[in-house]
Length: 244
Image (cartoon, rainbow, N blue to C red):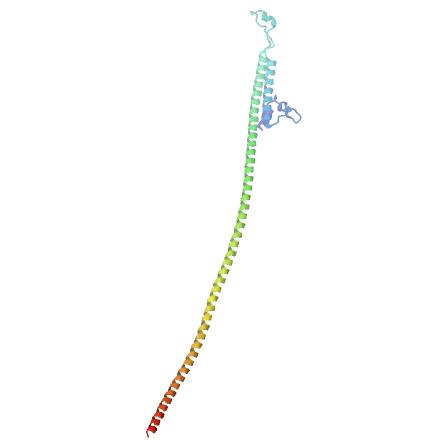
């Protein structure tokens, strides 16, 4: 809005005069924004110099005639064209030229401000692109880390599962070994119980046979003792009979 305000106030300055060469059909079109800015600034300054030169050429005082150069004592004739009113008109035109210069300066300030904002915008765009590239790179790294973490988690789950299975297998083998040991002890105890029972049965049988043998031996001894007494008695009787 400031640019349009200065252009509307400066009637003698037409931006299209020095922007005409920047149209798409112009062969001298700048190749970049910086060259375009330099071209506009140069055209604006050239336009200002042309206006100043034309105004000075149109309103400069008439020079002394060539004949006056022959004598240094001659004074230039009075020029009736130079009147107070014409002098005021010349001062007004000079003032208008000064106003045009001021307007051009303000316009340059506005254009420089616009170009500075454009350069800042370009710098911000480049910074945003760099930040976006870093963000994309960070996203790729995060995805890679997530993938590696998932792979590590799956590997850890598989390892824990394998450890659990191995633990169950070892526990089962340990239980089987303990069961086998207990069963072996139980079988040994059962065999010992059976052996003890058989031993007790044999002991009772031997005790009974020994008791019977002892009783039979006692009876035999008694029988022999009776026979011995009977024989002795018979011998005594025989001796007595022999004596008679």
